[in-house]
Length: 183
Image (cartoon, rainbow, N blue to C red):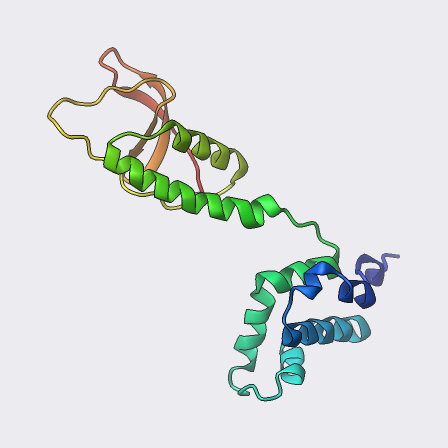
């Protein structure tokens, strides 16, 4: 028979963790109450923990407050310890920051009229490690009446989508473009 209690880290070990130490005093009390109640009763009840710890909280906003606490990144790290779930710092911390940097780089590249090598490499890394797409800035406007020419492997942006040129015609116009997914 599967013992659910064995899949959880004991509260005394959580209280000694560095993740738990990073929480404020009230949040530590809230997490300890939440975990202790779940361990004893088997019920994961953030509203009851919020009511018990934040005694001055408005009863009409306790539910909202409790779910905001559950969504807090630092608290999620502690709860991941409790549930003994593996965290992926690349997915949780690095990729969201990289998405912001890429968006800024694309805006700067738009002003220059071309995508830099660093931006291409960052997009490739991001695309390799992401599963969903993120909004991208508008394509760079290229001055003059001459149509731009492309090379296989170039990144292009059109109507909010970024793609990699896979094939071109004799005039250097893309004939096949595969979408690059960024989150």
